[in-house]
Length: 589
Image (cartoon, rainbow, N blue to C red; front, top):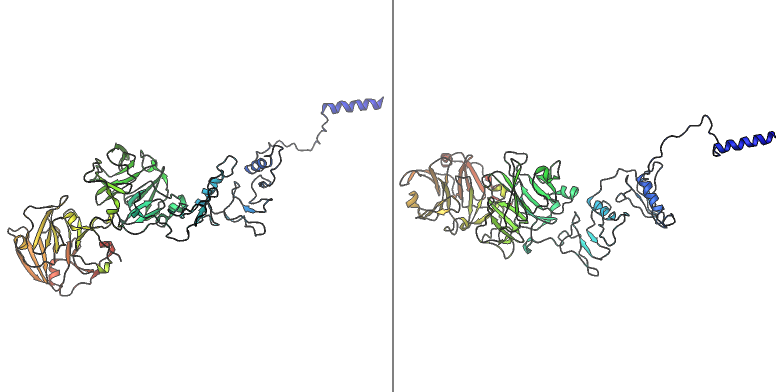
């Protein structure tokens, strides 16, 4: 009976506790909640349970996680024997994969930032929901340093082509299956040729006045010469953001803000990049709205418009037939529609004129009204670049500075400075827009075959050729005054060949150099006549000009500085000559 009682009591006890033994009195109870699975664990478990039976797929790579659920720095694929390093999200670190039998990389080394090629490749490789490449998609090939391999191939199509440092295809290098591929290591392989007639993405001068023409991943610095990769001039765009091309560009004109004046702005999609001295400024790129509120994204073209040419210092942004006029001071936008103007793929301001480029043509327009005057469109190859079988009469070859010899030089009352050499002239005051040569007959159509001397006085420019003098009003289009040309004797009271002539600021006496004689002519007298003749020690003068820094007397490829006309005449020892430079006259050093 006693044994039965004990057995019954034990059964009741077990029933009340569901058969679970009571914990020891000193045992600790774990009240901590179970942690959530990490990315690595989810990744691993997903691979391990992808078959209907919940087993691993044979041969599949299974991520390896540590005790905390994080990716082990080194991952290995058991089926292939390959090992590689990964980052904190399990992404393979470029250049770390080691095949079987080769030394593995030290995965504890600091990880370098991913390159554009690696970002590009990884983006393609993770575009499907399962994180695998899309079937048939082109996957960029990167080298051990993460840079684009010079030759890229599309496995699905069999096509191969050359790319630049930003992965942009180099025109003319694509080879279909079964055809010889282009040698992508040749630096000149299929460079784009603007003389073939192309549509530019953007055109802008830089802070030194060098005109830059952009197309795809290339640019042309200046009006002559071959293309070069854009990243040679704007490296950060390649290293950091890989623009590859730009939608629009302009050079800022904002003299009231020296920190912004002459900076170059590039636009791509909804971003803006600010450059100075070909270096990306801190804080860029930015959203367009941050710098230019109210200006749309995905622009076609842009061009600066200084006050005086526009109502205020402004930027014209083009998108389709709409022009968004941005006031730099008030940061406001007014939108106009210029349906009569072609859709501009690029635009630029040059020598105070405005040009809309479309295809390989351009159209000149008024920046306020958009009005087009004259016979347009015109072929850009005849005016904005040097191309065989194209041109508009200039045919000017840039000389070496040591070969420069000018015939005349002057500055008019508006500050425009001109030099004359043979049948061409050049504006020197437009260095912000570059230095460009034109036929003399383009501005002064009655003067052919060059000039001997030039000077400016009371909003008129005097051109001396042989024994004739031509006087033009300096207003737009240089109108020849009725009754001219006249003889030098009639106009100035002198005879014979003139070597040079100059007039100092705020004076009324023109100084005429003939051989080793300096003659002064009072321009207020009627009739005009020589008032003084002084001998000179310097001979064979080509040209002379007087400004705030004194008189520059040019002789061959050099010039001499004198403080005044009197010192020019009386000095028996000439000052040390200085060489004409590229900055002065656009010649080649």
